[in-house]
Figure (cartoon, rainbow, N blue to C red):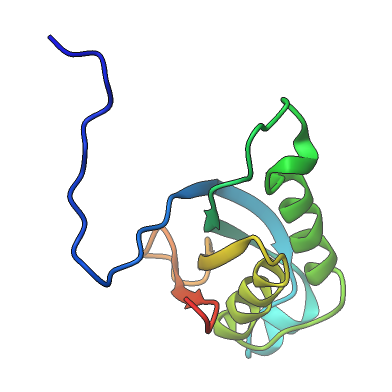
Length: 137
């Protein structure tokens, strides 16, 4: 059995890129979001899921956080968005989070899901998921 890496054939003219995923799952935070009066009066719990596609970091990593996209920094930035004030639509909130994630030039794609946990009594959650990519990818 060979221990060398398997060679992958690539189509001519297609540039191959290695990517990493940064994943934040089931982040539950209070948010002032919604179009109804009761939603505007008090925050409600939302579940946020984020998946970022990042370019493969330059080598060596040197075991240094500065060489990768930090999920902690992403979470802190999301919290900053939430304290800015009321947002009518979960779609607008998802766009704002995707934009902040894409502001890091290492991030080439962002999938953001926002779910209201108590909006519809018969549903575990309701919400939206969007996916955005840097225009040059």
